[in-house]
Image (cartoon, rainbow, N blue to C red; front, side, top):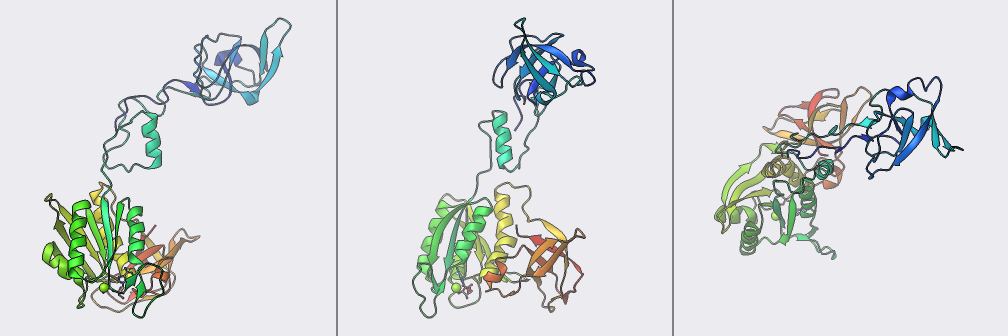
Length: 376
Ligand code: AMP
Ligand code: MG
């Protein structure tokens, strides 16, 4: 976005006070001077008179500077004397001010031709404010991606009814819908899909018609009822993956092409809730942000110091432990694990501020520096 207007559009006062000629009030701090009030300008009004020596114009914050005046004396440094016997209003000014005092010059914030926002700028509320300030009513943006989210599993219910043996309450899709929204995506909730290949195929195909990406949970590991794996293997162009990470080893990525011929990326996240979260963070979120033109696709990473031993065993995998973190008096980011680290224990992970990266090996000892990925 290149500015076609200046901001502010005219020189104006930053304070309530009196517009004067600076030279005319020199020495007023030592000995106050009385000046004739020849007018008043409120914000939104146009000046209709020049200010000369011996004169002052009462002026309100944001009002345009009158011609002739080159400084403003704050109202706090003035005293109203009222209208005298000669029918003339006067003000006593008790501060001297340099030329330009309390004046905001025209174009002080934005000049015509300024490149305000390069490609990739995230349109935050302050950016929207600036766009409004320069009358940029229509700007080109990357659209949000519309993402279908679904969970799979015959065991899942979300209708509030009492649990029967074998059933659990669905949680991933609820979580992922929120995480997608937080990532800037528009979300289409496709609900719970049973472990039924025909039904899953129908849902996935219609998702590929309507959405820019698909995020599913469950059904991508090695079990007999891992139907996501089976169906996508048949109808989509899949790159099956087993990630060398813990949690979130099972993962499926590929594309499902709709009738318009556009390949729709599919992120098959694992069903264990913590795995789903970690997998979303590491795989889906950066990709979705890239699709939306974000220059920064990754979460903030920083060097953290662990306050306790973070034990693990060599297993060929990188571990992502969920931690609480806070900045200590030493200015460093101190972390401790959230407690339960099982991939099914979402309650403990829900309070995590970050994940720390434990590379393959024996873990980290208290006081060691490790990488942390901030989750918010
Ligand atoms: P799956 O990846 O389908 O083999 O599921 C792995 C584990 O995660 C199983 O214990 C599932 O019951 C559980 N699970 C799968 N999907 C969900 C979900 N949407 N909400 C909560 N738990 C789930
Ligand atoms: Mg399942």
